[in-house]
Length: 199
Ligand SMILES: Nc1nc2c(c(=O)[nH]1)N[C@H]1C(S)=C(S)[C@@H](COP(=O)(O)O)O[C@H]1N2
Ligand SMILES: [Mo]
Image 1 (cartoon, helix red, strand yellow):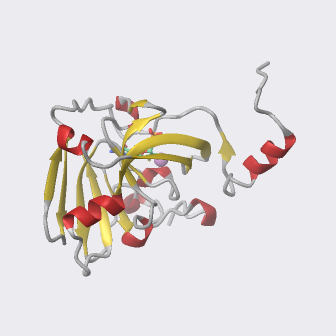
Image 2: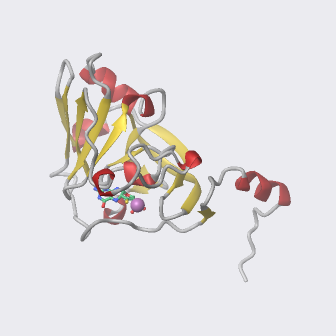
């Protein structure tokens, strides 16, 4: 039997209040991908930011590494019902990226595109104000291929399918356009506290 050194009744109570309805707590980090895991080398990776922006940008890995990174510790929640508390990431905030490119006032949604053909849509109010990052590290190491390395979107307050792995392009648009899972019956928004699982 495993003895959890950190166990205390109080702590367990606190954890419970952090698990959204219908979810269970796991200490694993399950992998959920559409297809085979791509390997995206840092020398081939870039992030393009375009659409309704004043100054479209394309950062390669070395350029992106120079942008201000923040440490982020957040709970994450997958629609397949696992929740993982205090996951530790490092990344560049979408607030910073949006300021750099000058997102126009007509823009209302972000569509994120990945190297495996995946996409997902997020309203801007869910990415501004310290809610979303382009993560380049997990648990103090580089992000592994299966978890979306070298860089993935991280939007911890929404179900984890919104956190696009192997992210390659961010497009700011005026009208919403459902992404890969959203056209296949997943909820358009995906708030775990409201159990916005399927539409
Ligand atoms: N590019 C891409 N991003 C993706 C996926 C995918 O298949 N491709 N799967 C999504 C789904 S459904 C989930 S639950 C999470 C899983 O992330 P993980 O494998 O790191 O746990 O990634 C999301 N991001
Ligand atoms: Mo998922």
